[in-house]
Each structure stands twice: as structure tokens, then as C-alpha cells.
Image (cartoon, rainbow, N blue to C red; front, side, top):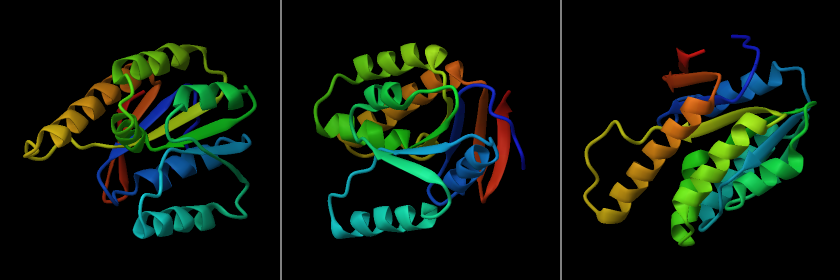
Length: 175
């Protein structure tokens, strides 16, 4: 599927839904220089392997990779330019990082919301939809789910297009 990116795009889906592959295709089809802003952090060997796998999968495909677990808006500002497309993968890992560091989540979300209308880059955000299951059994997990849901609403409102991906199939929700 070829889709032109006219403004921010949000791609939501569950684990292993195909959302990242779909988002990468959106950016690759933009015809612009491609930047990948990764928010994940390797806290254990399994996550280090996942990150290495993702890096290897993009290798040789023309991506410039930036890794920023906390200062998402600052990094977006540093690489923002009208002649590039930026894929942010993923917002839910960013939420996790903010929570683990005790950051002011409302302020971080507000800063992102304020940046989106002024962004010059073609932005594509990937995030895990975590609000479709049962209510989590512990407080931190419930707060994570709530933060992610609020962030998705903020980004979806500011986005030109929103997709939900399941089983590798994108469903256009907005745009």
C-alpha cells in the first residue's frame, strides 16, 4: 500500500501485529531521506537481541538511526527538517521510560502535542495499543495503560492519518 504522508501519522497495533513494518513502508514510500528514532532501552540480554535484530533489519536500507529513550521532543527538534521523514518507534516504550525515570508525563505529552503542528518533517509514530485487554492487576500497569491511552488520543488528534494494524493488515481510522 502506497500512502503519501501529509502530516503526522499514528500507527497503532498489538504486539507482532505488523505495525512497525507498515510504518517503515510508509516512510520508505515517502521518497524522503529516512530517519528512525528508537525509544527502546536494553535492560536485559533479550532486549539487546531485539534491538540488534531491528538495527540489522534496517541496515543497508538507507535509514539514519537516532536513539533517544527520554527526550523525544528534544530529539525530534534536533532532526526536524522539511526534507526528511522520521519514524518514531515506539511511543509506548517512551511512556515506559518516562515512568521508570519519574518524569512529568503530562508535561512531556504536552510538549509533544505542542511540537506536532510545527514539525517540518514527515512524522510517523508507532505505538502499542494496550487498552483492548483486561484491566491490569497492578497499579503501575494500570497507570501505564492509562498514560498510553491518553498519549494515543493526543497524537491521534494532531495526526493527519491514523491506522490500526492487526495480523499485518492496516485499517485506516482517520485521514
